[in-house]
Amino acid sequence: MESPTDHLSQACELLASHPVVDGHNDLPWALRERVRYDLNRMDIAGDRTGELHTDIPRLRKGGVGAQFWSVYVRSDMDGDDAVTATLEQIDGVRQLLERHPADLAAALSADDIEKARGEGRIASLMGAEGGHSINNSLGTLRALYALGVRYMTLTHNDNIAWADSATDEVGVGGLSAFGHEVVREMNRIGMLVDLSHVAPSTMRDALATTVAPVVFSHSSARAICDHVRNIPDDVLERMPANGGVAMATFVPKFILPEAVDWTRAADENMEAHGLHPLDTSPEAMKVHAAFEAASPRPVATVATVADHLDHMREVAGVDHIGIGGDFDGTAFTPAGLEDVAGYPNLIAELLGRGWSASDLAKLTWQNAVRTLRAAEDVARGLQAERGPSNATIEQLDG
Image 1 (spheres, rainbow, N blue to C red):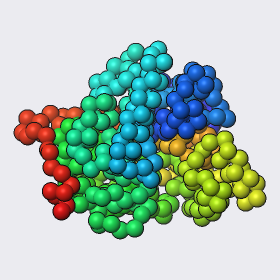
Image 2: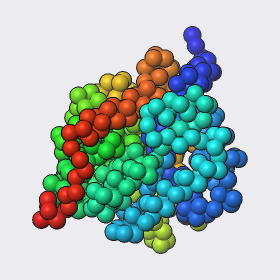
Image 3: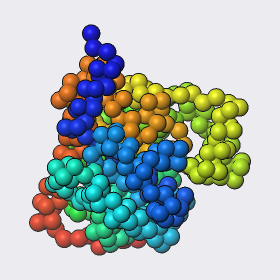
């Protein structure tokens, strides 16, 4: 009988050949909040344990081969302020890549991802988290693509004028007419439609409109943890026909039922101290630590994440699942997945559950690369058929 140590050794070997393509990491926002992109003050070339979930040594240890860096801005930013902040986030990622060219390679395509792996570098892509980043402008959407953004999450935590969020009240009831046009234009330019954070009605509307594969960059299974941020089974069942990939996240309040109520109380405590619930600054973490000391936190584990992946594989199929940890975008992480060095622990857990090496290669690397390549193929076909859409929200939504 193989031991857990054997499984961990096998996991590291597998990741050497088929590294993780992680769908979502909020390091750029953490660097913005902590040091305003001053990379001399927070250089990720060294171990930043205790400050960040992410640095280059731990990315290497974790077997990460490609990373979608989130160029997220908070959804309480809007209009031109949101666009400006998104551009600053993109610039922050570019500064990271320029500073660490031996380790991080800018990637704009599936071919670029494969090339970076061949060079022994970590392919670095960008994803915009929330449609507020385009300020209702298809021209701005195309500009973000030109700057390297390869997915856009249609909403973050709040509704926008053309799409409903999972964590807000019903607005337009999914996608508005302009929202459908956004999806069509994303298909045309080759930007992946990311359905994390959106309401189930928005997921279904987007799947009805898209002709390219979609992603869930960081969402888990609602059947395992009934949180509105997770993916219902009827949507997971539609992934094979769409061809996309649902990337399981590690955020405890989305994966462990016992953590849902605790996190709600912790968020209320943060707000009572005048802090945003998503704040992970040292000041905020002190507030969190004091709350946790008085009210112990339910702890998710590697097995908790594996339970979601088992279910997602059963419902969506092994060709349509991936990993999107959300490191540096959450105050808390599961035991064994404390930071980006933890991916081998998850792969070892899945090996212990009988997952084959070929299935794990799909989970870590192949599915995400295939999905991006398929979106690129769709875009080439659409661009041969039609030019850019210049529709406005006023024209389509009135």
